[in-house]
Length: 425
Length: 142
Image (cartoon, rainbow over all chains, first blue to last red; front, side, top):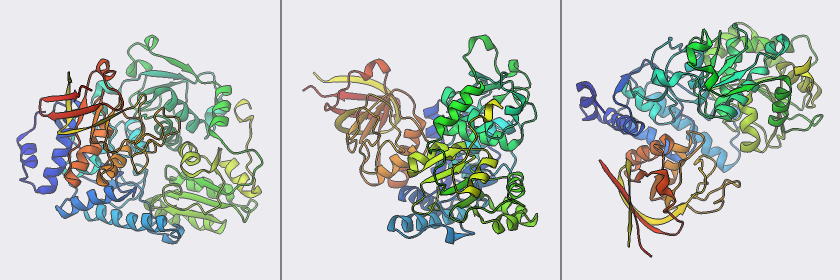
């Protein structure tokens, strides 16, 4: 790999031991990925701040001890602890205490490196908006797919550890989705047969994402037949689901997302790539496949805000709860968001409405990343394709993927409730 | 006679051990437990122990958190001693590179041709040697 004089100096330790360590990692990974050179990045988003175990903390502490400081604007993903509402996180068992303590330490280590303490998986909502065409080094699958697809910024699919290496050097190997040729579409999902009614449903988008991940794996899916003015929250839900059921790092929606004004702009020969037809039957079948809970079973908890809720989503929930029947007392109702949005929503008066209705607002983490669900939680209803994908296997809890209205109605009744004919209306 | 299989060095080092051959890719996140045992019930090598083995497979799959899980196994001395794969697998190599920087230990990972993968069998004794511009796996004659 060709390095500039500046990059050689970083590698040889002239900018300190931490920078040298990070450059060794980036040049080695670049060589492995076949990169010819390094590029400058405009921002970084760190996922390595979740506490999975001692090794991640050891790495972060090593960087801190070598004097690491970030040199580009750097946001951080959720941790495994709600620093604003610590009482929400269970610390009853030995394992839960280990995770809670480890979470505090690793979050502190990243804070010591000078990150902007956003603690959110959706930094693009209120903290940082990378510009079209700019190179960035973002980790966390939903943030990656959003930045690439909705903003048109360019990040490869960075994992834990390389994210901070880029943040403390301002560099990344020129590989993967940084390269324009790798950003073309590889398969088409044709939604033209769906009714206008279905295209307006919020639940359509996590379902499309789930299907895209299933069909695409790590390739780039292209949607045709969808509206041009899809709300950003729906695109967020689509991307998060596609990056959970598959490894999608970039999708295009023709006439909607910025790199796809036309099909030809992202696919040179549409006839020569696979096309999958999405119809109402497939949507119903897919929702049934994702949902593991039995209709009419008792509801333990509602989980909204994965990825973290936007101000619009918090407002929508407060409107939905306002002037309706109360939430059943045995149901726990969580909505996750970032602290920047929490402040905006508090000022707007939405948070007080939510709390008065019995909703627990979770910040800095996510109800399924930290130990938030109470022991005995058996069923969860959610509007998140990502939660629906991970929770049954990771937590042994049954889920239903639902609209916001179905989540609220189920919470009021204390019973799992959803409409099977949603897509045929 | 020993059999020499040449490859591409992904991470550097030299190690010897017994082969564990995986018929399908594995995710280190969820697919291998904290003791190095294959924990994915749907995997053909379910319950096989990968600790201190020369792990041979096409590639890993799944979440990038697999990098952390491999590194955690390195920390506990329960990782494979070497890995032979057929793709430049970023998740595996990231875990190994960061593990080396954090714990100062080598875990050679080499890439071989897919057509050479079938030469490896579980239980063989293999030495993996990986340096700049040169990598090979030597399968010891029985």
